[in-house]
Image (cartoon, rainbow, N blue to C red; front, top):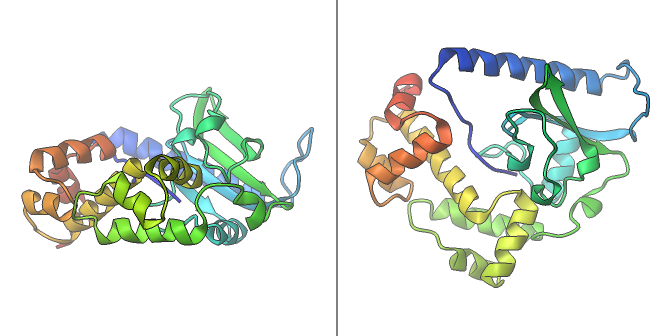
Length: 248
């Protein structure tokens, strides 16, 4: 899974740069997947699955093997919000903090894509020896993770408390918080915000609903709090996003 929502930049130059970076990452993924790729000095274990993330830790591409492995442990590759791992986000070349990685992601599988000293993204190669059993070493069982996600989506227009989510899977709040982050790479609060923002984007793009009503539909008590959160997570105001994407 998971997490955060896509971010947009109102600066056209930044948007163009992001598109170029994504194309570059797609080419990197193709080279890794190709049997004719240039051999390395120390060849890695044979890859069973390939995943590519951009410089903000957002999923760019995952092959079918990776999708099958991750879906078997409850990690949604093609869900909404799209998979995001904050520990892989970097504005410059720097080591990833292994402590913040989801439990299924072995740091040895990670390769940073760096060009001119700038980290453009990350390639994750899941080795052939990996299986759903080895990936799910800890964290929430798949059925409990699915129960929590379904609860969040069903109550996204309401205030959602940690105690409610923990009770849904019969865990203490402390234990649930720890296991949820191990499974997803983000905290329950971060995931809830991501889902709220994805729902808000859909309402902004596909309706002319007033902003105050959009805020209420995605669980915010007031419009100002919603607008501030939306801008912080997307780098755009709700009105700017609507003007750029509205199809209604």
